[in-house]
Length: 346
Image (tube, rainbow, N blue to C red):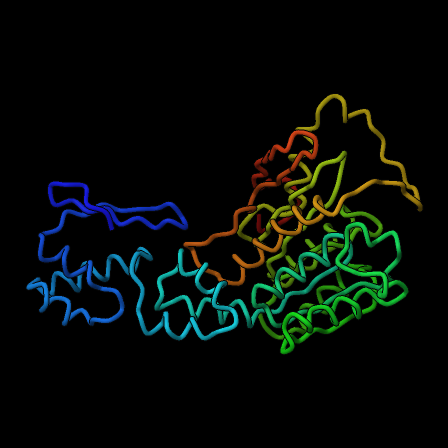
């Protein structure tokens, strides 16, 4: 709260760099300045001789704008293990709603398809953010070649990825519920049935790359459209780029196939003549920082979806991003809904 002269006061939130300016009578300004958690609104109005009704209205506006918080809520949050997550969310969601927002997050089921170079990072970051319900799907075992980019260690080599990752997640949050499925993503029908059996809400994160990210994303899209389940394409690597995938709300936003059509139209001349080679053993370089960048974007999207609040909407709807390792630049491409994609509800 900073005086700007002429009875104008700026309320500035340093974390989000957002602020509002109000013209306040001196008594009202004094009342707000003593709202440090020790006085009620009535006491502050009495001590500063401010109009209590006007102070109440101002407090409501400040509270809605996350510029004032309820002291009782702040005290409860201070005792929680996830208090830093709640305090972060409280910069966007008023204090009287932030606890419910976190309950939505912690109660959401995240279905992780693939827990390798990107998936292991996504699952770990979500566990660190307070999610407590996971299903990890991967039929692979940890190999030495995975250790340069995945969140596994040498003692994990030879173990199932889902078992090793579940153990790691339980060291972060002992109460986390992790179910491991040691299978490969095969077809949309089977995945749709699996999602339907969750009997409730869920978010699908596609990090599976066998036989390819394109193939698995197509399967995920078909399954999630039939079950109206939101999903995130976590991305991967391509031409030394970290790919930041789309977030899709079936029936409401562009789907994977919409994005594919637009990307094919936008391909540069240098890529049009390139031919994809089907190679069972690929020698593609990668780095842990690139995997972490992709995973961090995907994890942020899952958090936004789980909170389900219009003040914190998903950022990757109808678009895809690329991080260039050489230049350190981010580039985003808009991917609007396409009627000709074959998705009836797009």
